[in-house]
Amino acid sequence: MDSKRKVPASKRLTWFGETDRGNVRTNNEDAFLGLQFNSKELHRLGKHGEASIKSTDFVFAVSDGMGGAKAGEYASRIAVEKITTLLPRSFQLSAAGLTAGVDDVLTELFNEIHEALSYVGSSYHECAGMEATLSLCWFTPRWTYFAHIGDSRIYYLPARTGDIKQLSQDDTHVDWLLRNGQINEREARTHPRRNVLQKSLGGDNQFVDPQLGAVAHEPGDIFLLCTDGLVEGLYDNHLLEFLRPPKSTKAKTNPAHRLVKESLEKDGRDNTTALVIQMA
Image 1 (spheres, rainbow, N blue to C red):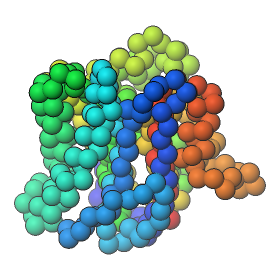
Image 2 (image 1 turned 90 degrees about the vertical axis):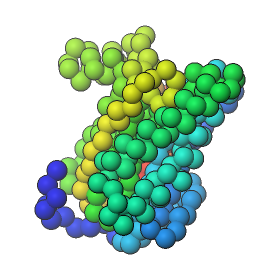
Image 3 (image 1 turned 180 degrees about the vertical axis):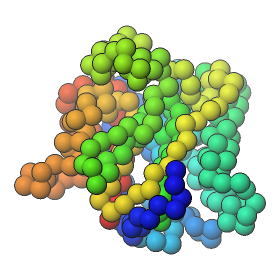
């Protein structure tokens, strides 16, 4: 990452969030979150809005919970709720020069969420074995920092190239096979072990090693955070089509709603969540 790279800083961002329990499940084990904060105050965001990014930071996250009974539902909500207290606290310390950097803050955040899920899972029978994925983007005036564990996803659509890139890597053996060219995308999507996680928060996992990274965002860039239910029904080219439709066919409905609706029509077996963030 070249910190000296000169790029125009985005001044505003617009976000859209949508979640649905799907056509089969009786409850929704997905959760998502949007926060706006600085060193003095914190605001929880709604499902849709627009705001300046010039002087405040934003965090968006999605989580997919797993476990028996309602343990999965609790797990995802614990994961996103912990962010509201842990990240602003770390931000305040960072502003005071008391922490080493963003990677350390995000690693500590994931560790504390992991410990919280492990504690609840071992303390209550109905929550035994609870686990959660977590995919998070932290937007500053110039950079988007991301952290990820599990098989929820973070996509990046840079305006300058017009393509779509998956920033996160699924923590599954099947995704490793795909990245190494041993299977193709269609084979990965139908593989019987595609949803078997190698890493997650909580459960019996002893170590937390989230994937960390950053990109310098520019006006026109788009970010998509989603749970695996969304991409069960949509390929990457479908995501690109709905997020960057031709101007002549652009729908008035928000892109997160369109993505979830389309995914449910094509598959719908799982809970489905999408968070779309557009830079301007």
